[in-house]
Structure formats: C-alpha cells, structure tokens
Length: 327
Length: 213
Image (tube, rainbow over all chains, first blue to last red; front, side):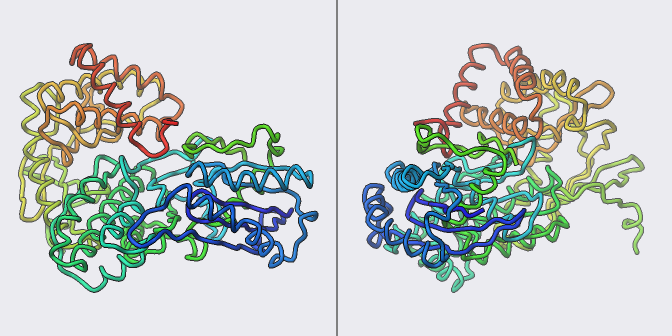
C-alpha cells in the first residue's frame, strides 16, 4: 500500500509517501517547507496559509519525485484534519480532496496528534507506551485504553512549546525558539526561583510565563536556565505520577519539544527510576511532518474505507481523546 | 546493614515519595520519604520537598477536626523529608469492583465537600488516595493540599477527579461522577455545588482544543 500524507496544521507544510507491507512501514520520502515569521513575532494564520498555498505544488512534486512514485500509483491519500489553525488546515484538505477526486483514490482525514504518536511508535518499536506529546499545540500525557487514547494529564492553559516560543519572542528571537533557549540555558547554572505549578497530574504554565519575563533582567541565560529547569521538572513530575498510576513499562516522547536534550535527560532519569523503557521519536520525525499523517492513514485503511468527499472537513479543535481507534 | 534497614520494607515507589512499611514506637507504621530527585535542580527540589512534607503533616492532622478520617502522624522530620504515619489496613478504592467504586464515590464526594467547606483543597484527588478500611473511607496524601476558599481551586479538585475517572475508570465514568456529585452536593449545598461545577466547565474550556469552536 502506498499512501501520500499531507500535513498543514501550523507552520509546516509537508508531504510524505509511506509504503506499508504487512505491519511494517517504510518512509519513501518526506518533504517539508516551514513558514518562518519575522523575528520576535508569532505565527500569523493567514500568512502561514498563504505560504502553504504557494509552496504546496512544489512540495508535492518534490515528494513524489523523491519517492519515485507517480500519483496514479498511489493507493490512498490522507491529510491532517485537525487540530490546528483553520486557514492552514484547509490548504492541506484542498490538496487532498483535489487529488482524491481527480485521480479517484480514497481519502482519509486523520488526527494530527494521533500522527505524532503512531509514527513515534512505528519508528521506535514501542508497543504499549505511556506517551508524552509536547509541541507548540500540545502538552499531554496519554495512554491507550479501551479503544481510545486517554488523557492522564495535560496543561491547563498554554503548552510547553508555546511557553518557550513566547519567552523567546519576548526576547526577540525567531520562532520556533526552543533551540535558542536550550542553547542559552546550557550556558548557565544559576537558578532563580520560579513558580512551580503541578495540579494533580496537570500542569499550568501561565504563571511561570509571567514570572520568567520578570527575571529576564537578571540575564537571559539565567532566565532560560531557570525556565527550563522549572518547566521540565513540572512535566517530569506529571509524567512520573502518570507512570506510577498506570504502571506502564514503556514511555515514549513525541512532538517538537522532544528534540530538547535537557527534557530527554530528565525523562530518562525518571524512566530508570520506574524500571521503564525509554523511547524518543527520532529528531527528524519528532516535529510536524507528512509521514505522521501518511502512517495513520495507512493504519486506518486496514480497518475502514476512505471518507466520502462531502465528509472531508477540517476540525480546528479535534481532541485526540475523542478519536476511536479501530486498529 | 543497620537495624533500621532490616525493619524497612519498600511498599511503593510513588511518583513523589517512596513508601516503606516499618514500625514506630512498636506500632506498625508507614514511612513516607520524599527522596531527592536527581533530575530536579537542587534549590527547586529542596524547596518543593520541604514545602510538601511540612504541608502534608500539618494538613493531615488539621482536617481531623472536621471529622475526616486520615492516618495519624507519628513523627515528622522536615530536614530528612520524612513522615511516619499510622498504617491503615484496607483496599485502595482504585482496586475495588466497579460496583463498589460507584458506591464509594458518593462518600468521596462527601469527604471532598467537607474539606472544601472548611477551606481546604486536596490537590491530588485520585482513586488511589482513598483507602476503604473496615467500611470507613480514609483519605491520604495531602502533599499538594492548600488552604483556599476560592471556587476556582475547589473546581480544580473536582476536575482532577473527573479526569481520573475518564482515564482510569472508563466504563463507569457517568455513574461514578454523578454519585460523587450527589455526595458533594449533600454536604456543600446545592447552590455552591452548581457554582463549582460551573467553574469546572470553565476550566475545561480553557484547556487545549476543548469544544470551543
């Protein structure tokens, strides 16, 4: 089975082709074009969607070329139908619908968060993990139970990615700012007290955000270090609680912030303490990419038919815990 | 190996603390140690561990005056982050049969309402923090508790409990939740209950990708 996956939930427009044989998947190509807002500014949905619209033909043809596949050879196409920014989502959906109707191939709308998890599982070989999904759009701790991914803990306000980006933008960096913050943090080891808010299994970052802005006068490196230490420890504690509550023996971290080494280090140490296997999504595929969408499409196609064209909507706030998993 | 080491038996490696079975003054006792977390910055780690140890010891005793069953505190050592607690024999609510959990949720609701009525939020309401012991419900783990009268804080307690039902007790979410609310309302009064439940949905809407569109 050959599936083209299209991702366009936020700043990334990406197409990927995966070939599925039995239970195994092979990524034939994965091409991305990322919208970069000006320094110190965040993503503007209209500008991002214009970027996606302008680059979609180029990304698509490059993706097919690299995979050495013709559109006519595709068995199906899947697109990220949510959650994400409406204008951006619609671009991916339009591309998917056009291909599906013109070439008469089945189309699958898939959940973006599910893409992060399923691709992470496929690439690492994790079977039944507790998952931490950390990105610009999500900060969630999930485990699979009774046909659905259940949320064991999440952020009550902004996400970890947003927290890092907003602090970075406040300092005038270009988004996404995670890498820059990690770099600065690694140059300091002086900790300034910041609010640490864990509510049961949930975390809240908004107070931490305001407090970090206030200590920036003490030096950016100190601020970044203290921010990372506090925020990551909060996430660490929430994960630890979920691990001890669920008793899972595998742990998987996925999403853009998974690339952060300090966060990985913290989580690895937690897993060791709980005798739990630690998996992290490969850096290349941790962030948003078409492969995630393609892989979920392939998994779904093993159990159900494609969607009728009139049902290929986008859903901006499509929570992962509302998706039933048939496979 | 010292004598104390022989008497200690690790019962549970919790998220926050290690739980040992031991003796205190010849009585069976639970020793709760908040161990140093290597991954956490030391200043931050010490701040959190001290705060929670002291708070837990204080609150667990204080709430007894509202008629709530908690373990007795035998001894606290905030420098070593240790608390010696009375050993409670019984079963965690989490491990009971579905039918029993639904029934017990009403009692949990009453206990939570009693706490709230007296200006205490628990902060970690899960089904593994309640022990059913000789038909009496004992509540544990006050490390995240707080003195607060705010509706928002009380709603956070309820939301967490709801989240636990939704994730760990999938098959019985509806009856358990309404049983909880029944008990909660009986103690706190209908008007206040409505206010808190309303606030729970406000918090839920604040969450990511809640059904707002």
